Structures are given as C-alpha cells and as structure tokens.
Image (cartoon, rainbow, N blue to C red; front, side):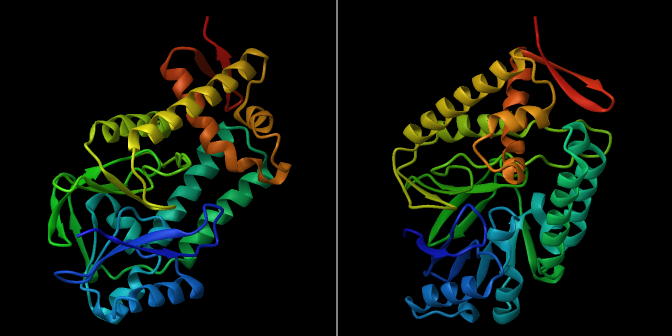
Length: 321
C-alpha cells in the first residue's frame, strides 16, 4: 500500500513537515511532527480521517531525530504504549535531546563558530537556540525505544522497506526504500529545496566531517535507485527524482562557483564570505546561510581549488595555486 501523507505545521522557515501513515496490517506512523499544539491538532485530524487516534498507533518510526520529525514521539508513545523505532545512530538524540543539543552548542561555542569568525553576539544567539531546542524537546523514555540498523528491513504497510543511511543533512538520517513498488520515503534527503547540510559535532579526536560533500555522495546513491514515487519530509510527493537531483547539483555547483569568486576577490573568513553570499538577507539573519557556505567551501577544498589556514584561530581561505 502507499503511505498516506499527513501534513503538520511547524514554526520553522522550512514550513510544514510530513508524516506518513500506514493503516494496514497495523497502524504505523513514520515521523510525527514538532511538539506544538497546532501540530498535535493537525495530527489528530489526519488520523481521524482514517478512524484512528494516537492511541491506535502500534509503532512510530523516526527517520532522523530532528525536532520537526520526532518532537511528538514521546507523547504518542505515552498515549498508545507503542514503541518508537529509530536507527541506532540516532538513539541518543531521542532519549536525551537536552544532552545532545548541549554538546552541539558547546562544540559550536568552542570550535566551529570561532573558526568561522562569527562575532560573539551572533555566536551566543546560535548557541542559545540549540540549547533551548534541547530543553524544549520531550525525551522518549528508553524503555519505549527500539532500534534498527542500516541495511535492516522494516515491515510497513504489508511490505518490506530497506533501511538506507543517507547522511549529509543529518548524520543520523535514514530513508526507507521499497524496491518492488519503487517507493522511497526520503525524509529530508530529497526535497524540493536542497536541505541544509548541518555541521555536526565530530567524534573525540576526529576531524569535522564535511556535510555537503557527504550529502552529494548520498545524492549519488539516491540517483542510482529505481524509484517511481518519492515521499519527502517536506512538500508534495513527486516523481522523476533524477531530474530533481540534477537541478540541485546544478544549483550547488553554481553557488560553489560564487564562493570561489569571492575568495579570489580577497574575502578570507567564513563570516565575511557569508555576508557577501547572503547580502540579500537582513544582517541579523545572514547566519542562516553559514552551514551552506561552509559546505561550498568544503567542496572547493575537496576539489583542491581552495586551501585554508588558521589566522588567530580563525579559518582564512585562499585560492590554491
């Protein structure tokens, strides 16, 4: 059977988020929206269209533990007693979001934002946001969580769906592929607009992983799949996934070229480059482009076109001659 889309409102710029319902042979919900009263009401209404309530859900499956996809999981688990399934990669984010967001905020404070040359006032605002998200996110009790692994098969809607790891937007992101019907639950991997490549806190004594190059590798793997219908985390389901992938590649390569041109003009720090690349944004909101910019610079470094040196603890970018 095809997954049934239920659209839920969020408070984020990305707009509404999708969750997907399978009604047979048992009610399963893939993702569940952010914890907001209006999101809960929309979920209740969507389930009611199929004569269901949250108490009827037998399993919640989470694609990745971003709050717009997993925020209501604890509430549903409490009402129905159902397990919440997530890849083992994302377990810690689900059961202890306050700790995980706090660790990210610490990494940004001590390393990433300083290295990017972000002014202190803006850096504090970004750190405070992540700390607040962690505080506001309801943890799922460990006894309610069941994990699966990349490469496993999950039964949903009377069919077997393969668990595929598709990092880039989130290092923990999994998507689900049904090869017989050629359906793809893409989470935030394939979206109408390229998802932000989130800079993740690296493992101890390990370098930062370049999120946008990793996302591009995931795009390559998606392109190789035989897909008829894509069910994205945001926006309408669509076909012709390879056309969308090529469009996103073209856009990324163009913006990467824009970043290279600015480095050639003498812009050195990520902060200065951000202000030029996103000059069309109000100054207070230009930081929203920082993660994408770092991705373009990571691609340029991987291609050998740009090199980076530290100057007083801040990345300085130069054209590699």
